[in-house]
Image (cartoon, rainbow, N blue to C red; front, side, top):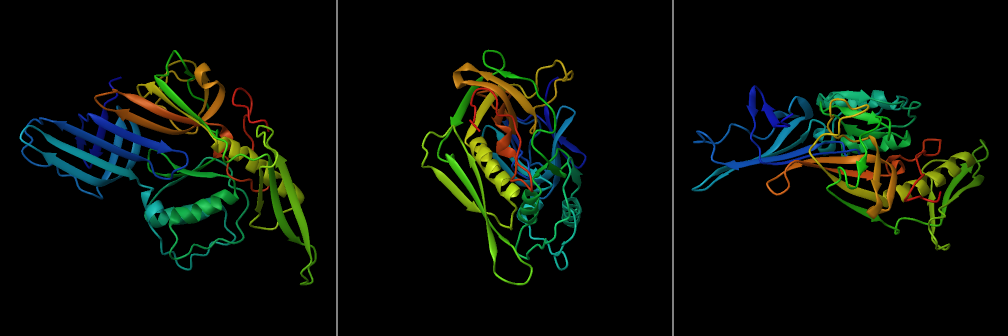
Length: 361
């Protein structure tokens, strides 16, 4: 495969880019692209007819990687060459930027997918639901000055799901690790460069989750004090204590689950690696006969003795890059699955904790 990047606007196709950044993240709602060309164009006697708000599709060969809008068009020239840089984001950028005016804004008693469909429908954005979304939400009202994504992301956390986008520009409701696996990243084979961050500032030896639950229905102020606890044995300083109040009344099992999730989540966000591999596609092999493009939300074995790493991690971000210095390459950001597991909506978070970089939980 030539892996040529094609930008399609209307019926016009633009190719020949010599600088490329295409980024997708599991923690972001809108993928982005930034592409440029700087050369002697054949017959380039005027600027391309591209403007902000044009709807655009970005392909790598025949694989669509982004559907969205042009946000900036930057032509330039001098005595020797012409240049153009174009950047944009997924269709879901309107969810991130805009405050919709949807009647009363009240969605109480609806399930998350129904609420998301209504909000996305306001912008003409599709919805792709990859997982269960839980029970109806008893209280869900979007404020007039609240962005659509801020509103939906708040509800998604209550149901322990993630919001991201796909190549077609749809909003995606998903959970970490449900999209299968990817080709292994192995030092000495397909890793060009790598760096890791093992941080301790967000880790604590003891986690406490506090809640006050009413014990009577007669209007009195009697409250039952609920206290959930968890520990991180990988944190050697026993006096590092983290405590938080739940947003809503919790049972003892719920408080324990929240404390356990907090310990695992804080380990996850404290541990990550950025791995650079050649090209934009995974190695062909079992389960990947066509050499699929790297993508987010895939579980990937990572083996790097220098990083003291030999375990399965989750791909949280991919960035396809091209420039004159490094050629085609992909920067893959990986972390423990727990880094991408939202707070439990009544159950504890799960995720692999085996192997090097053991969290001790």
